[in-house]
Image (cartoon, rainbow, N blue to C red):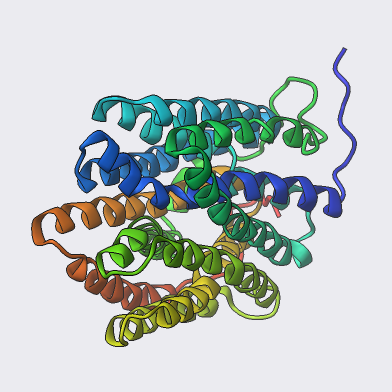
Length: 407
């Protein structure tokens, strides 16, 4: 006999959802620390490693669409269970892959699919369905801040695991940690999804998709998110090697990634809070333009540990702060009925950008011996993203009488 779960309180939702995002995002933020150990041990090029991470981001984006559909229809709990299992399998495979193909399938495909079921699109769908509209952006900021805290907590931990146990055993330990998502997901079972029957939806998936993709503001949000993915994944994966190439110690890179995570706790919370008071498009435009300025100053200044830490702290404030206003704008425009799915499609654009950023970094480095061109592209894209977010219309979309309102 199926029992209907009790209603989720906001503290319960943020506690369990935040813990899941802390684990899932925290683990993946440290993957750049494995670039040099794995390529040196296996005799692979940086492009080989970067291509697997690029596939991971693309698999995450594509799988996120379907994970969102399933979470909207059957509840997020089942999706998270599968995601946790795939995460553990992918990390074990990453540790023991001996060919580039095996590495791509485990690190790229399996972990990418796992992240689709254990990160923002699914968690934000739960928030959208269970948090009132007047607190939704704030709650999304809390969840995003949890992912940032995960980076602050997990990146130094991963660096310590590598130094103490070696890169292979460190991945096995992380695989075991990923399984903790399963019991945490139990705390996010939603009322209406406990009977095994799909939840009723007045607007079909096809109707929701047609509506969204014909709406210019949806397209503009997708364009901005493409840039977000390009910038953060290029920096997150390639900055440790960039700093090593410039003669700085590996500890500088670990501390820099941790600082990004720490300061992004404040940045994402602030963005989510401001999203309740200001137009979200203006917040997004500021974030993207500010990123372009910060990257430019980083490249112009002399490279020292101090300049790296200043860059990391400033970029950290801007790192995932795009996530709460983007997803809150989606909920505000289209309602919450298909929130996870639409968030998944926008995130797919983010992951296409991630694919391009991480792969292009490895490709250009292997051919030019430096990352200069990719940094310049990241600056130009930041300006572009800031401009395309300004025309976004955040008012709820008007539907014909009888159509689902979803809010």
